[in-house]
Length: 136
Image 1 (tube, rainbow, N blue to C red):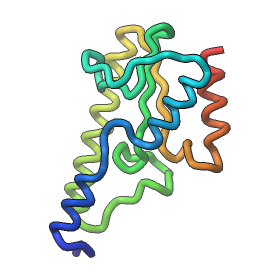
Image 2 (tube, rainbow, N blue to C red; image 1 turned 30 degrees about the vertical axis):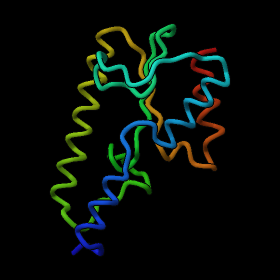
Image 3 (cartoon, rainbow, N blue to C red; image 1 turned 180 degrees about the vertical axis):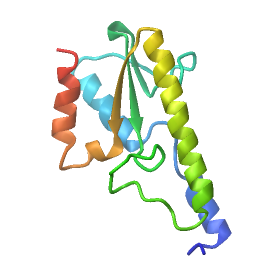
């Protein structure tokens, strides 16, 4: 049983963005401050990567731990209501992620995946340094 009324739940779900999320903005701001120039959400690439660095033939996906089923992460908790529906949704996202990665690799792109939990205060510095090191 859901703890919210259907209207409240519907409103809450509508507020969740797919683009320009806070974790994505953190990565974009960091890259820009280091002199990297990029394109956003390129529609003609598989999976519409969040960030595309054409000069380096690299794409970056900033994945939400819940939406992409980050195994072993404390932010990925299977909901207790509509469990089957949510597992189907998350599994579909994971299959789409794998398909996109395969197609991008075949096209010669390097792929970087940054998880939402890696951008939390305790790990953000390490994550961004590791990201920067991939280019220098």
